[in-house]
Image 1 (cartoon, one colour):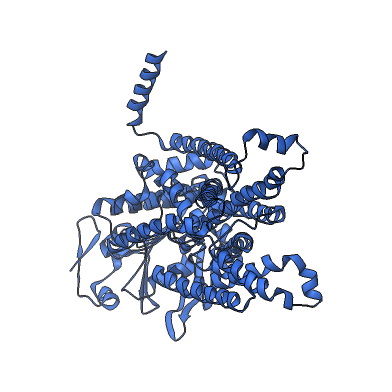
Image 2 (cartoon, rainbow over the protein chains, first blue to last red):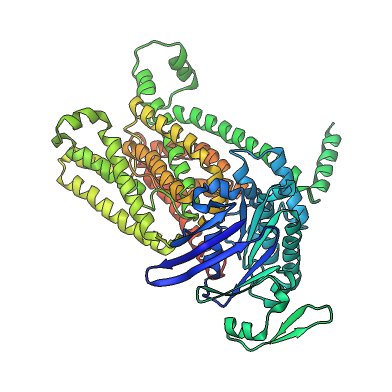
Length: 257
Length: 374
């Protein structure tokens, strides 16, 4: 559904991503991992259409990404970033409504309002709707942002294929929020949503991912459809950290440091 | 009857504390936006009525009514009212709307509450362009000049405003983020440059012109006539209508440029379009009345305190409230030193500069606390 061919990106002399070939199967939870500066965010921004590749091409439904308008793309995929700064007072419900901006011209329809209300419900954040965004805690704010991106890809439930990009969505959230957010994303994979996430926590990745990609110095070094097959040697190579991979009784793996 | 009203009020209070469903909430808010519009519009009408009455010569309501609809008499008071007072009050409303809407647009674009046309160089650039025509206009000849004719002044004002705004925007925008410090410093430099240029023209100009340039740098509505009303009126109304089409995109921009792009908005194109639109609105007004600072700063700020940052509300509200406030300031400028008049730019600066300082202090505090701006 989404694939990258021979993808490279450089600014001046510095190469951020070098000849990466990738394919993302639909309705799966894909996780991109790698050390800081490995090119994860660059890759995500290229895949999401925010950056134009210096070389190579990204294809969405076999059509090059550059042939989509911003509007068309906004109706195909949503992006949740790590955090947001909003300079002016705005109600949380207005932030959620932004997810519907690609779908209406001036005023939201009844349907748009219902979708916002439902996506708030899904994130268990209805009571936050009337609050001023800048007074929310980090976790609450991220739930509102997640509600917003859910509203943007809501039509997935009606059978349209959508992509959800998560750019380190849980790095500053506490345990409960981390799992709530990733579990919601995992649930969406059953409803025509393909999730592509950058995660820092290897154990979270092992828990949720169907497919893990490891980047190192702008290149794809490992790729596995079976997260349980990762080894300490692989992690040593990618992160330059000595770890132990433990096997649990249920077959899952846990990485300890 | 009275007891029932009280009971209703108490009931209203008891429901106010409860959490409302978000959907109901959204609908309620649309209703209350229009009640704000109606309130502001009523306030504007009231201000206009009082404003046409008061001045160097007070004109009674009876006379105003008869001058407008019935009287054909050839009195000084009548021609004062129809040729000076009335166009001035209407022009003032349009200029107030133009500057305030411009402030709202610029604040949304720069994603910063301390931006306004006077600070980022738009006004002084436009003033420089206009001063150029003012002094040098007669020396320019040729078929093109003849063709442009009466539109020389607004055209040069637009060019000057656009140049100044572009320079400040380019300098302050580093890697897609607006650096507030660079913005303010670049604004100071460009303003100084433009003011220096205007000062130069006022120096080389012959006396009567020079005096009017100086006066005009402080802003004045004394040049109001019906032609000015048509020019500023049309440009402002068109500008506001076009600006409203951007209100959704400007809201999305609250999240940041990248995020607005993810929501389907072509941010690069929008920025250029908005700077041009904004310069157009400001330059038309500035070419007639000179530099009036700080109005564009205060008005959107007041509205945000009242009812949040939805840009659709801010644009419509700024147009109405801006017209009201500038008319109040103009009334003041006409009565303080009666029968002479006080430059209106001084009044807006006296009121606006403290508000600006307050915002600046609050802003830097928030920055220190790690929130708000990147």
